[in-house]
Structures are given as C-alpha cells and as structure tokens.
Image 1 (cartoon, rainbow, N blue to C red):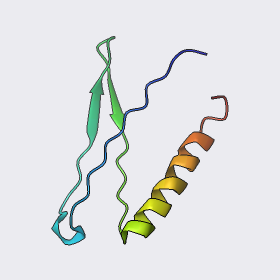
Image 2 (image 1 turned 180 degrees about the vertical axis):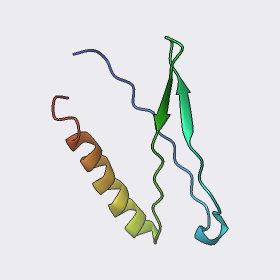
Image 3 (image 1 turned 45 degrees about the vertical axis):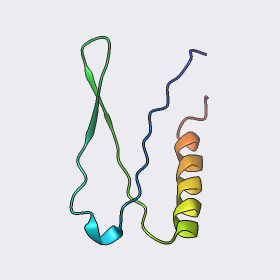
Amino acid sequence: MANLTLIYGLRLLPSDEVAEVGSATIKLKNGRDAHIALHILDGSKDEIEKQLQASLAAFFDIYPEI
C-alpha cells in the first residue's frame, strides 16, 4: 500500500463566537484541488473528546482497505 497523508487541524473557540466555517482547499501536485470536510464539535471538554474519538473511528471505518 502507498504511504498516505492525513491532513487535519484543530482549534478551540468559545462556541458563541463562531459565526461561519468555510471550506478548506488543498492544492495537489497534479494541479487539481482537493477539498476537506470541516466538522464542528460543541460541548464540554469531555464531550468534545468523546465526539472526536468517535469521529476518528468512523473516518477510518470509511476506508476498510487501510
């Protein structure tokens, strides 16, 4: 299997300050663009950690061949 690259970013902000989340674009070497789905998790620290762990597990379930 080829080597893979996982691209991610995290940022915590007060939930009442977030007005909008835009899309993230990656420029590929072949000149094309790839897009990243951005997800928002709200709640306490423990709730966010639980949601994040579940989200990561679900992400890898999408790619069973990995």
